[in-house]
Image (tube, rainbow, N blue to C red; front, top):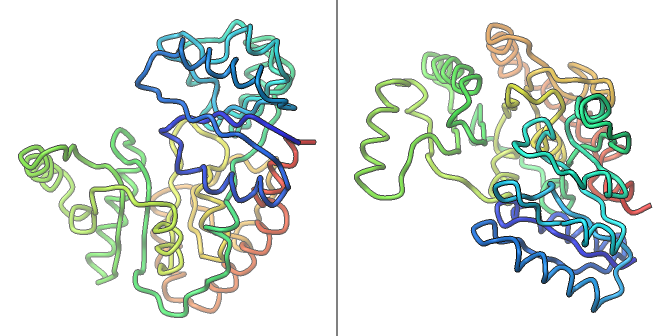
Length: 327
């Protein structure tokens, strides 16, 4: 099979994982990296030229990319070749609706509620739920660590998410008061230049005095993420408020048999079993209770981590997920 794989630069962190799985499946692919800063007209024409020049069996795009309502894949593209789109953000969050979305051969979304939303609101009945899971080479290589550097860790975008801030504030206070080692990576305040970084840090420290002690205000690579998960006793997962499905971090943490403490999500499609594959929490109070318990019960924690890793790698490898698109 020969495919044209279209993805934006902002999601380029996923490219190594897709590359590994395409190679494992003996899929011949051409990568088209979309520059979201530039006008889409020229890039659309480049995609058409690629399609006309090469014998692609299908096109796969991650998210239905648009710039101010002007979509990258126009009707002329969608009619030239079987096109498949995989939403890794909810379709319900899109500011603009694509009048040509019905021309896609198949629509996939990592958000379970998009299936009913698309049917009722868009009269679109070719939407399937498909989670974005973990790349084998980076997150599932079984390079297990025996010594833990941190008690608690979290990686993710926090700025703009009050839910994540409230949870992390409470966990940071617990860790400080109980002398636990915690580390948090993400974007908490602007740091484009020194003055901005200093001022932003001062404001954040005033508003979040406990959390500030553990924050590293920068992003890390997927490879660094994988090592951090392996070095942490309890890896926190905190979903964005308007998402009901499991994010890719759910599978990245579990992929290498790391322990995960996760807010409970819609479990109708993926049958995670609480306290067998990972541990769910439904409130901050429950999170702190479970955190304290599993930091002090190593045997149970490691058993759940092993079971979760086995479950994810057996049923939800990225290779198996991509196979569903390529069938």
